[in-house]
Image 1 (spheres, rainbow, N blue to C red):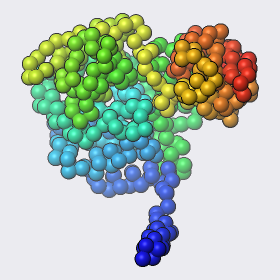
Image 2: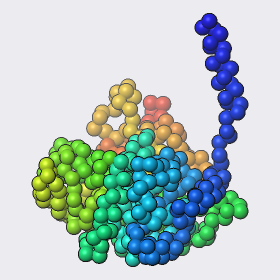
Image 3: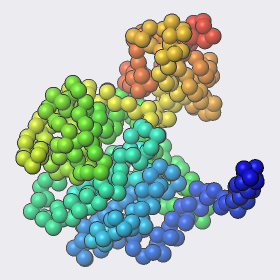
Image 4: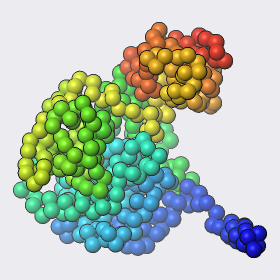
Length: 442
């Protein structure tokens, strides 16, 4: 009997696999999105001017979703938003909803957000005042773990409340729009203008014609690098998560504290779990992304006044940021780290050496030990390979020091303490023997 059931299950599995839909290629995903969303008639598609005009005409606030269609990250969350999930559909009806699916032509002075995201949302007035942002991603495997429909609904409701009070509250939103961008649109960056235009090629290879948001940050860093300028820390460590200052926020709420790390800046400021952050540095908060915006915009050192609600009572706290507070951040998970690897490591991917291997090799915990997990094989990402680096090498000295470093530290040293063309002396362990190499900077 058991064998018969097993045979039946196996047969059904084989049949199912034969009739399973083939994977959709990137170009088809982009074309399908435009066809399906425009056919529904609810969302304005890739037309900011039309969205602003309709918001002005109707008096509704504007919801702008910036979404990278080919990217799998946040795909499920995005589908619930664009399909007007029952949990948020009633509130979406109170907005003019606009979907932007390309970096091409994006107004970089208006749409400033974490460009490593594949889903970001703006709540706006028709006069381009930004009420708030929504969209966050961490280095974890679950790339949508920091965004929830519950949290999104509360952000929508709060934005509607703020819109109802507008323009009496307009002054509070002034700092939510950033400074003038270096270039008006992404395709004006020198490294992008040679390949991209302001429009997508829907008749050809449409995915390849799209400027992905992470390419904006890549292009900006490249401009600075080619001018032999150091990268400001706000450029090297963009949009830090609140975790960097010791705050873990609840993604199902507004800007609400879930945990506070011991001995962190947040703990010293007096934050406690359950605190609802009403405003930070004078800006009203409705999401984790809003907190990130304030952190991104802050100078260093800085003192940020936080108005909170604790157990129904208002309080005021002061969050102090030290000179190099951003250096506690880990940026190695970001898509833009691949371009940093090209420039700062010659194409190497470096991971902390695991404890078991460290012990086996007799490497002390207070000494440098980074495992070469990947060596780039092509183009400029093969510079380290051409310099003699191999997969599974272990870096034990870097630039004359065996002080422990992370890959993010290597990025900072390579980008800000050296210039392109430099070759940093490196000692690696290979098959138990030390090998002297030079890491090329590009």
